[in-house]
Image (tube, rainbow, N blue to C red; front, top):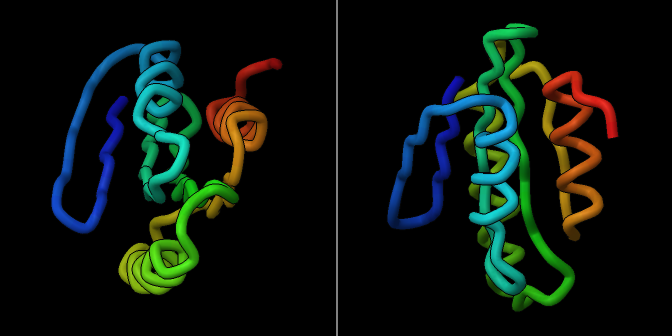
Amino acid sequence: ESIIEVTSHKMKSEFGSVAEIKKDITDMCGIEECYYVIVDSPDNKKIGLFSWAPDTAPVRQKMVHSSSVDTLKKKLDGIMDKQYQCSDMDDLETHLNTHLGLKD
């Protein structure tokens, strides 16, 4: 399993168990920064795009993030299973559990 975090200036790849993936994503998502995270789960063979844009992020950052996510979605067309919009930790946890087939 792998996680790829893509921001405007960096990319990070981590490997681990499903529990570690969940923790890594939760740890990566700051309170005021926008993120896009691609999660590939070999167990259910799905690629999910998680868009993290908290309500507290500056409006300009949200606009740039939205545009970047749209471009990324086009690049992933045909291989991406689903996009998940997350604005708080509850959204992230719920969507991650759904994507990975975990129970709450």
